[in-house]
Image 1: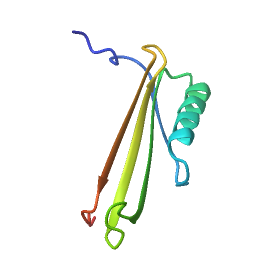
Image 2: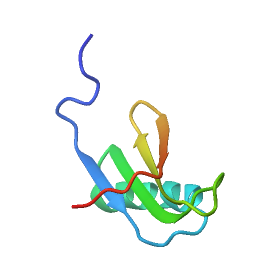
Image 3: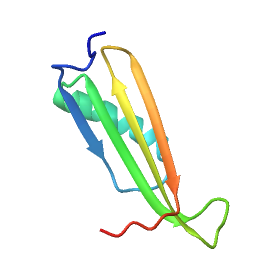
Image 4: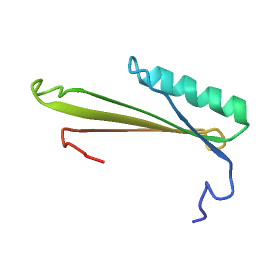
Length: 87
């Protein structure tokens, strides 16, 4: 099977505001596609705060969106961890 993304233009969008993450990701991806003329957009957002299950433990929540106009595809991924990552 041939790679459906090979040779195509993509754009990466990110933002730092943390409220209502899903809707802004879609808007951001669509806006980035309109601005650049790309067919593929990747948008991401993350936040740090209390763990949803154990409020005394901090957690990191990340969400990403892949939007492909040509394939009419939208993929959302999310990950939450309470592991401390030091750079």
